[in-house]
Length: 231
Ligand SMILES: *[C@@H]1O[C@H](CO)[C@@H](O)[C@H](O)[C@H]1NC(C)=O
Image (cartoon, rainbow, N blue to C red; front, side, top):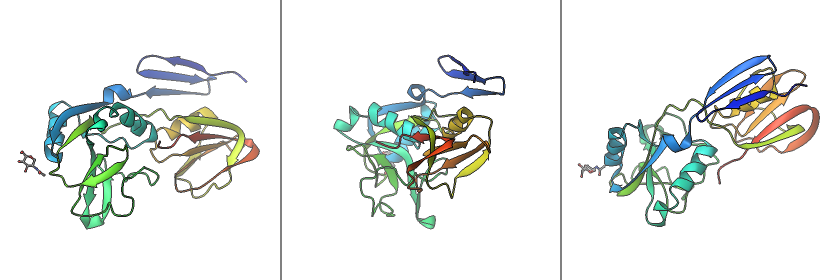
């Protein structure tokens, strides 16, 4: 079997996989995608400030990799105070959503897991302890700004050759691909992806989410990507 050629530049990675398929990834550099505002502002003022700086708004660190990056980038600021994120409570649907309309993944770390859906606390921030929490929008916090269109996140995790998750349904999505590499790349496109399973015979790639409490079982016809979850 031929190894894929991998050409990586600063912000763009092109993968040409044994002439079978060609995937061009416009990867997005985490450093250039988030910015911290070291100024105590309420939620609306923080959002306005982010937009004035050219960002889409407050940050949406919804994938494990983005969240890990934001945790690290805010470590110093969080010794003092938390930072606003683009997270709001919508009483009409009793849901907390990111500003891109997606729901936070169920395995994200929260400060108060049971009682965060409260109309009195409709604005979200990263708390000093490095977990999510909701508070009043008039509170004064630092902020993390970000762009909301995220073409591709490089998923971090491990490849397990000859292993398959023992539970494979329901999957978030499944489709035919040519290679394991292509399957694992798709994991980075879906912030809920926790496993990407490739079957070498059927060539089916299954993306599995955090709700599936799967463990791995030996299967010579499978390769599985296990994404690192939130810290
Ligand atoms: C945020 O601060 C601005 C300026 O002080 C004020 O006009 C606005 O009402 C405040 N918003 C909230 C939600 O507290």
